[in-house]
Image 1 (cartoon, rainbow, N blue to C red):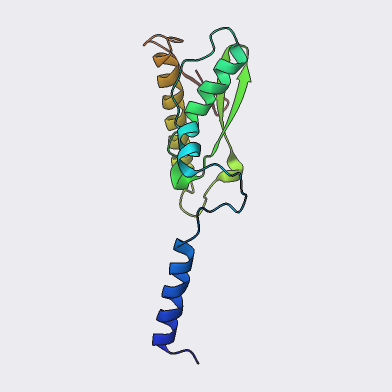
Image 2 (tube, rainbow, N blue to C red):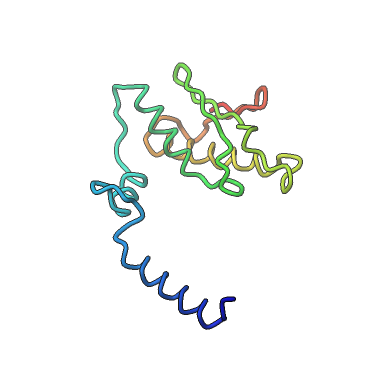
Length: 139
């Protein structure tokens, strides 16, 4: 049987050994946390001529939105000059959100990020419209 003292000493030594690890990745050429964070949170100008690249970049901004229980419960559909946001019902949390209220609030957060990114890049004016059709948001 393990005594309390032996457990604490073992746990502290394991924690100290883990602190010596250089990173979470075992790959020798893995990017550092700072590099990955900079790539994720980068801000820059959108590629004006390439409409597909612009839509993908706007979707990237939309995915940075908060979501209920960090479920990221959205799907994006790229159409001719439009982005549709659809709920990903496979990521529902019925135990804590039985009526999907939080799921649709998360979609609203993604839609807000998307519209703010489009507004910041001059792609829509302040009177942009959003429609709720067939359980999807279209900006």
